[in-house]
Length: 156
Image 1 (cartoon, rainbow, N blue to C red):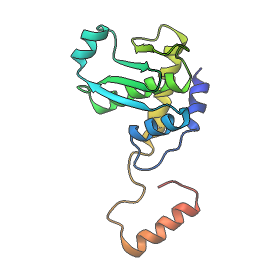
Image 2 (tube, one colour):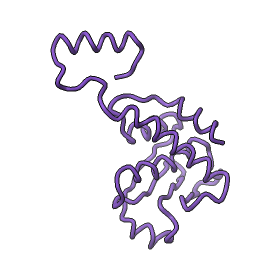
Image 3 (spheres, rainbow, N blue to C red):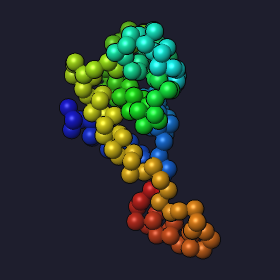
C-alpha cells in the first residue's frame, strides 16, 4: 500500500516553487475530470459531515469537489487536499454518478492508501517548495546557472 502510493507520487511532475494547486491541476488533467477546491470553515465541515471528518471529496458526474477546512494551518490544508487527491488517483469512487468519501480516520484500506499518498506527496513537495536559484542572483550569473541546472536535468 505504501509502495503503491510512493510510485503514484513519483509519477507526478514537481517544479519550483511547488504548490498544492500544481498537483491538483496535474491530477485533474491526467484524470480528464476537473477538480475544484472548496475551502470552508471547519465549523461548516463539522455541521455538514460530523466532528470526525476533516475533508471530503465529492465525485459528481463531470467534476470532483474537494471540501476542506480553511481555518487550519496551510500545511494541514495541503495534507487534507493531498489525501483527497489520493482517492482520485487510486479510483476509490463508485461508478455511480455521485459519490462521496470522507477523511475521518483510517479504518479501511482506501483511507490508509489515500493517507500514504498524502504523506509521500507532502514529503516530496517539501524538496520543491523554494526556488532553486535565489532571486538575488540576476543577469548573466542567473542565465549561466539556469543553463547548468537544466543541463543536469533538474527542474527549476
